[in-house]
Image (cartoon, rainbow over all chains, first blue to last red; front, side):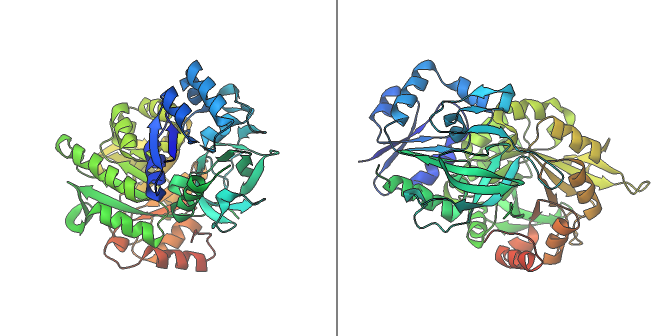
Length: 203
Length: 255
């Protein structure tokens, strides 16, 4: 039976991610864990993140970070929101934070104005730039739920884009890694479809 | 392509049941919160807000259970408010499955609580609810009120919303206590002034009686989202009808 582990490093609301995965799982087991052995034995990983990136990076113990870096390289992995940002090279948030540099790109602050509210909060359209198994049965330009104040403006690994004032990268994909700025667990039908595709995904 | 304007049905929950009254009086029962949340999700609501209107110690456990049941069945954002007083309250609500927590009276009494909460959990999950009452003396002055409108604070809504924005709030839920429950429409002057003064998203609330009111809140008031309760609870309109009306008037909505 496929073991999916949602990595728990003490940050954010993992309940909604695991509940959404459970809602679409057929035979997969969904576990929320920070146990190194459980993470090593898993078949797939979900790497969530919410809040400030510095707190997220600091919440990692050295051992957990090493294990995650090792495992993320070879298992189907889905990174969400700040989890996605942590896989990039760096972020401007909290006066500059170094990322894990697994994916190409940098994270910068969204420019706000009277019309362009920050946080970028709410439903916005996701335009596909390439095909990917995780986008199967999802219409191009479907709405997904976003909530973030920082974004990635360009990346070699860009898969979809979204506009909020500026055009930014709303998801990235590289080999066994799929990373999204939006929250599939809060994006109703389209989000659940994406989770279903993740469970079906073999790399 | 732009961020869609949101429709947020609001569940006022008292001891595990959805209720809705006029100016907090004449409360009538509108049903089971989980069933209602599921219906709204199916109809295309963009988010759900649940306000625990009693928020006493005795009913708190019921609230956590309700939040948990909604969150395990409804996959859109859920904001929970009412009686949120401490970092522990927020932690408990987020663990139960809330995505955002709305703070009202305790923010007014201790503004640093907003800062502390935003630092700890991130701005994205901290909504500051502001209840506003128009002044009889000045057209451009709205006073912050607390305890469901019973307590006047003397504070100016415009400077208060700027302050909480600086303190790290992620969103403002702005309710006109003059309009709440009246079905006369939002106080759009208020919504416009607040929305214009800060870069945070503003949710307009209080007074929706028909679909034109929702449209005006966005077009006239400049709100990012509109919140309503009774027009949806008693099936006067469905969320889908509301969205169709908004789209027909040129507002970007999600279908």
